[in-house]
Length: 310
Ligand SMILES: [Fe+2]
Image (cartoon, rainbow, N blue to C red; front, side, top):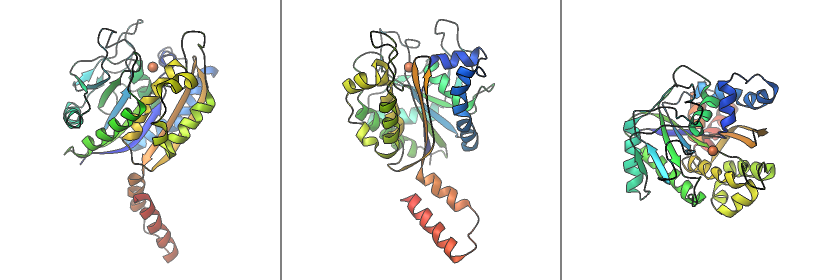
């Protein structure tokens, strides 16, 4: 059986990609941002997922405004980096996992989520920047990736609740896949930012931090945030945060927050990042540790495993 073991959320600011590509990561402005992902890269290197599902939005790269699918699942064998106006980013071609992606498409569509199936698709900074932040800049990405593009650029985007429920359906799909795979799911975009209009440059750290808190402890509360509230509190582009709810919906109700990072700004955006692990994973880890030496230690370990598994 395949399983989702953890979720990662991260902003996907295009200027972060440009800083990597132009070798500016050691400059003080950017070091503040990149150093926040050092631990995340260590975590990812240890976690070594077999597949990553990356929920992101396309920024008029693969889809123009002529065709805007609400949810588009990448089922191809590979996804080249898109030319976003300055040539394609110098990152590896993203290799897909057509078998798992097709299985997810079948399961989720039969669960009444009307995905668009993409057998050919280029991917832009929305996907490649979080990949760099978590995997670094290798010659080849270390695992196959299933891209899930969500419309958050043309009104109406899906609601947070719909996104959360899609996450639930994706989890069910992954768990019914016959292969033995550990899957990590990414939610990308956000946090608060607005790139045009009179409120350009808006950042709302209070809203962002409460969102991060609730993402761990009370995600259902976040599913009730209407679009207007995202726009008002987090800026026009803050609506990207609904994509984080797909990631969260794919995890257990109770999760362990293993890492969080927040900094302001990168370009004109608040950068937020969180790593959540399913407790089943923690329970598995606990079982692997060597047997406790005293009766008391054995009792504590049993309680931990029981709590983790509940
Ligand atoms: Fe974006």
